Length: 635
Image (cartoon, rainbow, N blue to C red):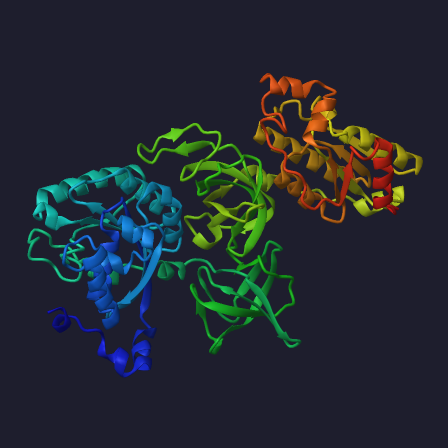
């Protein structure tokens, strides 16, 4: 019977080019299905693929076979198997990863993302929602609204999805009871209003039976709204709205195929652009006029949001990857401090003050996150006090980038307002976020130019500024060796300054403790002082445990590879503890001193330091002579 009813589009087999041309000019809607575990997301997508004739004969045969072996619908077709591709998903009957599927109707093309329902895979759901125009929030009619319903609805709203469909699924299992449907819709409406969702479309469906998916069902005569497919075909797409906004294009590549052509390539994030338009390159602020807009098919009279183009300008202005071309009359903002919402996506919690990579559009910068202002409880929408963020937690925090970036608030422009955070050591994506606004102090504080440059300061002292960064365990001999090195440099008439860990904590950093976040802030402040001292032309010596690689990397990025010299004072823990000049190891072993490096707090030894000295094999003076020989000539 299935073979008689089910038939794919004959044009696919007869003339594939004609079939592709038929679909070429259709608009594309990206949407996600989300909700709690076993609400029927995969089954719904499978039904959409089946009803839109997007399954070929061999796939259908495999589906029927798999349905009998591992399906959950008895001898009937289990549509979820079309989407749940991972073996673990089929065995458990749940969705783990985000599965993307394409299908088309006569009016529109679609890419749908089946997002996992389990709380532990919330990060996967955020990935799917980040590019969606619409979200289908599924609710099991038997269970009503659950925690994940709220979580996913809140995330969709935060991620800027304004088209929401409340699909009350499995209506066949409650005998298509209108009263239960109305009660679920009323509960959801109350919750939606509390988080700022202004409207949504509620549809009673059965993904398994096909009720109200492509045609209105006789089982719900009391429902007079659109079918799910009708609604998906008619809803406005984000790209249409983006085209009406001001022009924005993050530059991905400077295109120089020959000496006579120079253009700036990228995907237009919003607005339109055409020859003759005045555009501004940010962050430099330089203004020019568009000479031509080039695409694969040649020069264009106009390009709109969603198109990838190369823009040629009348003037040879400075513009490179990471910059943004924008309308000259309404450019985006440029700042380095922001308030943001962050969704934490890593098993390891957020480390306040640690430097992460931040990718926003085509811009990549170093960023630090302050203590969260609050964490959001998605069940109650309460704002809870929090010192950090753990896996799947959502919080609002201030962030600071190491240089000014071009942005729009996320509610106005996803491309220039949404970002991801990347751990600098592991290269794992650890968080996703949305910028709200720049902080006022970021706009009011400017770098004051001075006439006497750092080069002039260095020339007056007849030397090249350096930071000699001594790192090692407590008791390794950092301060002793640094002191010896400074004495030898003084004899050579070098201008130096020694920053010692203990001395700095008497004044500049007396407010900091020894927790991980305080250690990070301690090193950050020292890095800033080092940078100012090298600007003065000095050779700076620092003696700090500085246990974390990421924080030493932060200082290296501040100073620059050429002027930052990492010196690992390599002493085994047992040797350093045997020395115990200050009696700190003894206190740590007795539990009287918490967060002590090497005992109950880790030390991450340098992997590729410029210089390594072993204090077991060398005396402090020998180590100092070796360091001097390696860093000369300093000039």
